[in-house]
Image 1 (cartoon, rainbow, N blue to C red):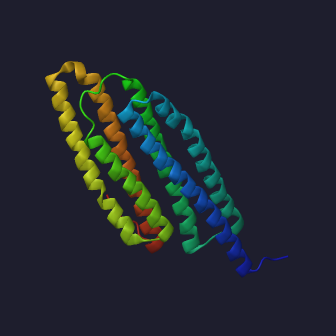
Image 2: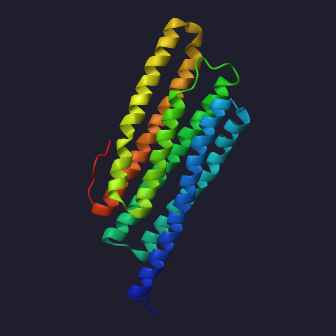
Image 3: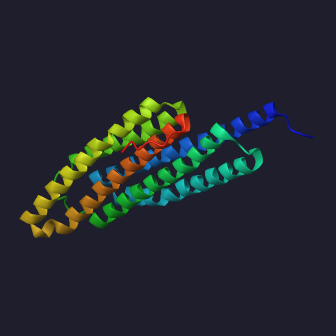
Length: 223
């Protein structure tokens, strides 16, 4: 029996809704991973860092589940035009979220390398950088759910602040290393962490660009 277009539409929307819920679940886990990775640095809690690394597997599993769901949707529903953009956007977004999770895991691994040795300087700019980055991740996902282009564009503008903080951290740590060569190893690890946060912000910007594409069909560079 042939499925009527109206019924096919209902099936497509229901399946998309299920995939979007999984996407938001993935996003929540990514936000938590970023927060816990930096918290493990601030408190030098190596067990927390290890938990972040282990939880990355669940995020990878969700990525595969969503990817398989999208491919099944394309094969069975044969979406056209804007519906196809929805599926394509979802596929791109899970790639960005998975990379964010990898960077959060990299931060946790770096924390384990630092261990419990005293920090060479108080953590000021890295927590600030984290707060801005977390805001970008949250707003990028909110802009997707609301299909809000103005929110996506506004979110991406925070990337300049993240870049500025990264450069500031780089300059300060470079000065510390020059003044005391014994700090070089830890300072390098802290630079890695700053770089990972900067890359997470870049991926949030990518999501914003995908939202613009979803709503308007235009490819815009927001970075």
